Structures are given as structure tokens and as C-alpha cells.
Length: 142
Length: 151
Image 1 (tube, each protein chain N blue to C red):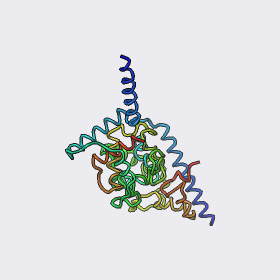
Image 2: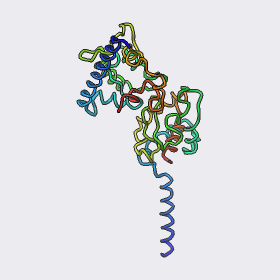
Image 3: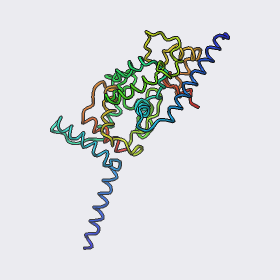
Image 4: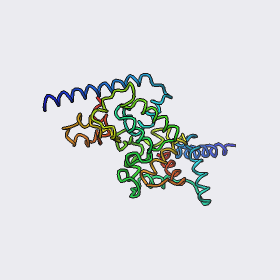
């Protein structure tokens, strides 16, 4: 019986660490991520999940295919999404990182609206479900 | 600086103050689900929610009819929201009944300015301002009215 307690404690600790790593993904973000995961699976049966590292690279990438005023997501959102950003006409943008703005990525219609607009403006095309999910996973990991 | 120019600028400034004053009055009557609130939420997400009386109705229609290409950015909205915002802007435009008509001054009927900064009154008011004032970090662009006009 005594042995069970440390095992249980270790299990709790492991669960706690797992939670810490994903601390910012609340039920709202998870529902939005599930939506994009489903679309990603439809687009590619070998879909194997989202990656914060890929999302970070996507966020920081400099593009030449969209509006030259905004070559990167980071043009407006800064290179650290925990910072407040600024639109091209000087209006403040609340931080994208879920840890700083907990309501981010909880409203699917709003997420789709901004992806539709900003992917077109910055990249000159619509984003794939994989890119959308990686991006949100990165923003939820900070 | 002639006396005449001073008079024009004084008149223009008074007109702008009146336009801004009307906006403040309208804002007090706004509810969270009013067309004005929709306009402020959607358009104001990226830039100052410009007062409708700064452009004629034909300009607002031209702008909202192609939000996918909005000053080189995609600002598209769903059709219902677009219609709601267009109705609000047209109803309170510079040439709408009951509006302050100051920004129609010098504007010919055939002109459909897409930018407030292209209206003759805006140009008259801002004539002589050092161009560097508009690009300083606090302001960034002429489109950022509140970079200078606030506080």
C-alpha cells in the first residue's frame, strides 16, 4: 500500500507537468484546435498533430508573396507575441499569446475571419488547416 | 498667412470640432448591439473608427463594396455585417440629411475620395504641416488621426 502512494504522487506530478506545458490551452482553444485538426486530417490522412515549433517558424517567416507593407505576422504582432502589437495605422493590438490574452482563439468565427484576412494580406493566399493549428498551438504555448 | 486663409482655417476648425462633438453625442446613445457599435467594433479593430461625416455616402459605399482590397489589406466581413456597417455610414455621411456638411466643402459631385486625407477640407486644414510629423513613430501615417488629435 505504501508503494502506491509514491507512484500516485509521481503520476500526479507527471500530469501536473503535462498540464503546465499546455497551461494556456483552455477548453475554448481546444475546441478551435479540434476543428482545424479535423480539417487537416481531411486534407492529409497522414496528419500527425500540430507543432508549436512549426507555428513559431510560420509566425516569424518573412514573405514575398503578399502585401510588401506586412511581410510577416511579426510585422504587426512583434517577434514576441506576448507583446502588444500595432496595426499599420498605429492602433494597438492585444498580445496574441493566450497567456496574456486568455480569450484568444476561443471564438471560431473570429479566428476564421482573421485568418481569412491576414493570411491573404501577409502571404497572398489562404492558410492551410495545418498552418492554422500550428499557429494557434504556438500562441497557446507561450 | 493671409487674413482670408486664417478665416478659412478657423471655419474649418470649428466645423471639425462640431463634427467630433456630434460624434461624441451619438456615442452616448449607442448600445452594444447598435449599428454604430458594430461599426466601431469591426472597423475600429484596425484603425480609429473614422466619423461617417468625414466622407460623402458615395465614398463609404465605394469603400465597403470592396473590403477584400481595403488599402492593400484584406478587411473582408460577412455580407450581413458589411451591409449593417454600410447603412450606418451612409445614414451619417457628410451629405446625409442632418449631418454636418463641412467635409463636402470644395468637393465636386463627381469626386469619390477613398481617403479622408484626399478631401479638400482635410488638405486645407493640414496644409503647411511638416510631412515628418505624419511619419513620427507616435503617428506612423496620416490615417492615424488620433496620433495627433488625442490628448
